Length: 374
Image (cartoon, rainbow, N blue to C red; front, side, top):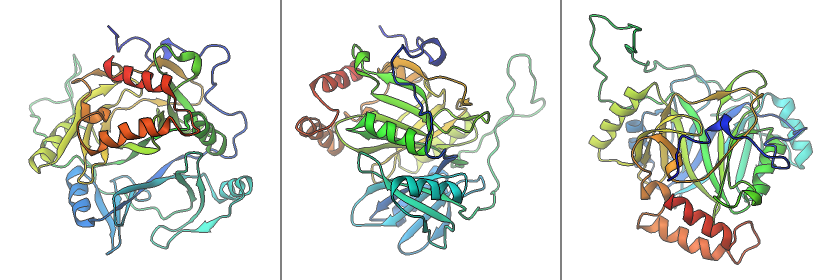
């Protein structure tokens, strides 16, 4: 039996000659994930779910919905009207405009202005999997909103609450900020290296298919390099798979009570939990996953790891049981193998990709099938 508590980050590092998890001289170093962009046919349904999930509407027009958290900054999700539901790509914050000029020069692009509703400027790129990637600077900063605070807990001998009760409201868990996005690529290694080289991201943890470590990693949890300033364990995670697609995105909330009470509110509104509540291994976050009306997977999380740039990547085998330290087993819905349109599309992609020029082959297919069984 696989022990999900073994091989946690610092207990297993890289071997000589394995991927170092960072580039020596990246073009720039982005400082954070700015926002995610989607296209959806029904903005009203998207906004209803967003409010139940804990977002606040920053801007609403007939053609676009900008959603934000309570922290100051740019909106963290942009939704545009479209004929079908699709993920349009991630946007990262550069440190300043000078970095945008440097990135544009290195990639043969140019710095463009953003719409007035967002402000600032951007460089528009595409990674090796074909996904549009934006890098922005000097965007408008929205003021902070009243937030949801973590409840005071009596832990062990530390008394923080006396003559007072706990009564967390069964209400939306207020989103504080965008934490990370997870993407799947048929060209995992090339796409990983592109992000490390151009955006200066660094790897916190690598996962590999059991018995295939010699072929290199198949998943990477990647953080921003802010030097001695701690950064989220992963701002971007990437995994090898048979199709280039969005996997999920994650949004920070106050604490476990916010996650649990907010989950009860979502259930009461008729929305569907995908997997949770539990605590991850890589990143350590307390998590809860939900499906929005368009089928996109979104996560509430709290209490994630923060690393500075001194930590080297951890290495561990990829298994379904190793996704959480505690909580219910990973569901078929979360793993993408539940019966339905998504699983059918993924199965078709598995065999179609075997005929394409990419990193997906029969050994990788066997490795991925083994993941769900261990």
